[in-house]
Length: 159
Image (tube, rainbow, N blue to C red):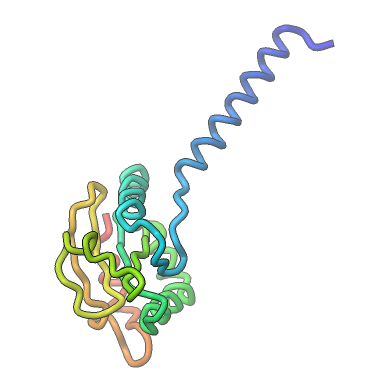
């Protein structure tokens, strides 16, 4: 037999668990792992800024496309260097914005300096203010990215 106090305790525990699960689901934003012309860039960046503010981070807006070989090289470079990945994950919310013939996101991207090449990184503070427009060509070395330069860039603009 369940007593009234045991039932109240069980309800409090269930309510607490539901609140925690809901909060975790809201805190974890799902951002594209690929450049997707169908995504709403303005909404994705707004969500990234909200998440960055809540987590005390900054935002990196990665502009490129699935057609862009250097975009894939950048993704591979970050993924294959655990220390770089950890640094990026601990300091930034990373969001991809598509630029392709299917969707150039011109209206959205017009708020920032013109992009000369891809990928291009924009660093935003937790309020969405542009801090840096970064040509990734300056971070390249041979057929990949220069780890020292890339880490220096990430550290310089981190919150």
